[in-house]
Image (cartoon, rainbow, N blue to C red; front, side, top):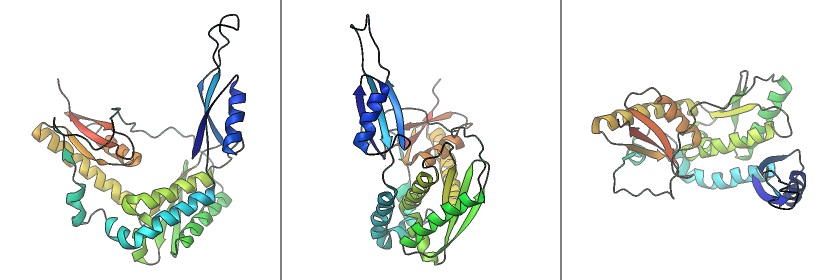
Length: 281
C-alpha cells in the first residue's frame, strides 16, 4: 500500500492533492486526518492548515506478481525444508533466548507496548454464494500461476470465509506456505484486498494450506507455556523470536491468565517480538 501526507487549507483540498499524487480514486483511498485546520484568532493568529495521510492500494496485478516472483524463485531450494515447524533441525535455531542486562537486541530502538489480544470487533455479514465463488476462483488463479495444482476447501462463518488450499502434490505444500508462512500470508493479504475492494462492508478472508495455521497455533501455545514456566523457574524475563502480529497475539492470549508473568511486545517490524516478563511486587 502506497501513502503520502499532504497539507492544505482544508481537509478536502489536502485529500485531493494526495489522491492526485497517488493516482487513485477517493473511493479506493484510506484517509487519515492527522490535524484539523484551525482558523486562529480573528482568522489571523495561530491558524493551522489541515494535514492528512492518504493511503491507496497498489495495483492488484503488481502485488500478485510480487508474491509469485519473490517467493517462487526461493522456495524450490529453501522453502520445503524450512517450513516444517515440527522439524528437529529448526528447533534449536528457533529457541528463544533469555534476557540479560548486558544483552543488546538486534532491532532498532524499542517501543514497549502491550499487544492487543482481541480481534477488532466486526459486525456479522451475509455472504452470498456468488461472492464465495469469485474469491475461490481468484485463489485458484493465484495457485495456478505458481505452477501448482490444488483443491480448495471453503468454510463460512458470520464474519468471513476460510479457504484451505490442499495441493495435489504433497511436495507443493511447502511452496504454498513459504518460509514461516510468508507466502501464505501474502496470498491471504491479496485475497483480502480483492474481497474488500470498493465495498462498504468488511469480510474477513482467511487462507490456510493443509491445516498449517492450526498446527502453528498449537506449536505457539506450547512454546508460550514452556517459556513462561522457564521465566518463573529462573526468575528471568524471556525474549522470544521475532513474530508477525498474528503469532504475537497467540502468545499474548495464551498467557493472559498465567500467574506471575505478563507479556509485552517490543521492537520494530520485522524484528518485533514478545517478551515474557516477571511480575515484580
